[in-house]
Length: 584
Ligand code: ASP
Image 1 (tube, rainbow, N blue to C red):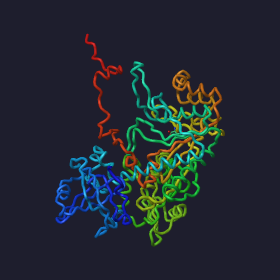
Image 2 (image 1 turned 90 degrees about the vertical axis):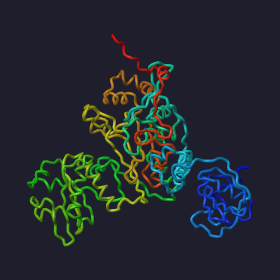
Image 3 (image 1 turned 180 degrees about the vertical axis):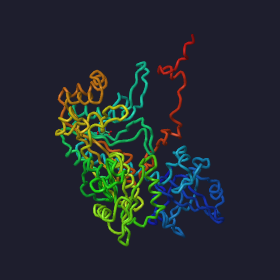
Image 4 (image 1 turned 135 degrees about the horizontal axis):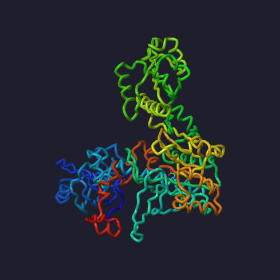
């Protein structure tokens, strides 16, 4: 028998029991008169106390190296000096036999909660990194969230139905990963960017409530902390309106926070996309703190300051308690908004000093009375600092949104243990791609317009709002979905707007358009980013910490070294071999 107990299990109450434990050697400490061996498995660490007067055991103990796999049989004893930091800290094992089950090379980094291994090295030896407590706890949390999600959705009548991985393109706004078909020369499958079309077909098929915790694949230029394959909680419901979907998934989110973190969440506030952009310059605002935008066009323009006068929008925030910022700090903040990522020309400020005086960077154009007007508009008090940007609407809002988050960070207003969800509603249906001049679906082409905006499709497509919604948490997008189009004609019109010819639409999505002619019920759904949700519940934003075998920022798995070239024979078999050009 390899073990009677785990290394995390034994307590003082087990004193006197004869037990067998198996695990990995975390540490060996030879004190001369005895050797302490820390034996570890995924449940914990138990100390083995090998007395030096037992020559055979002492010799074996001294042969043990880090990460050796060993089996120990012995008796549970009370420790002389207890370790309050671990649950098994009151006991140790007095061994009668120690068997080496397998040796180990010295690991390239310490397999302990605090490791000396850098990211790259740990990823290369991920199977060793996975032995570490923090990583194990993250994966156990992920498992818990997965189980609780299943429990909740099952209780709501959702069926877990698998959809295929080898399909045809489903547009979610990224590039497809493709798989060549050996049996169909020159033809390719696409890996799903999401199961979108299949879950809609399941609704046509009458399955009513579907879910899947499913892998999705998107070939995007990798921004920090994006994975080319990631997991979604993917859902679809028939005979529902937006309200039904929001209630069900607000319910799921509350249930997860309660069951996993023991937190009760109040009802989630809602905001429209338009309002979110106007107040926070973001479609996923962090509303753990206020610092809402104040638009200043009506009182700051036409006072002779050209930067303001030429701007589409003059808008600012009140950074409370920052009036003492020095010249140097303000210059640094100005440089911050001038960085290419933010891209503003400059930053204007107004200090409401503690002595009640007002000092701005544009005193030449605005007298004290005018500045009093600003302070009033921002509801500013002595001690506050008003920061103002000016420029075109979209860019300026976005930049101020970033500055707001930055000030929120500096002021410690974004508390990690404060969870603040928010529904964002009424997204635009379409967005214009500046380069090609073509319309793109903001969510995806299957999203239905709000009924009251339907008419605008033919006259002013950019103004049409979608029946779409996102759930955000602390400024991070957790999930998004929409009520779908279930009418063939409207879906065909949507494809037309997006620049598909009827033939292209038919070739790519004929199966879905066709299915809409056989009794498609009204339906809608949502998908949550599962990796991100796990990270949020685990208290970080780093999703690869919650994935057993993640890829790095260039989309590589550095452990198995993928992607990798294929040999010529395999390429040939797939009709992908590049033939040498004919000379002549
Ligand atoms: N398929 C969508 C996505 O992956 C989610 C949805 O509309 O249900 O973002």
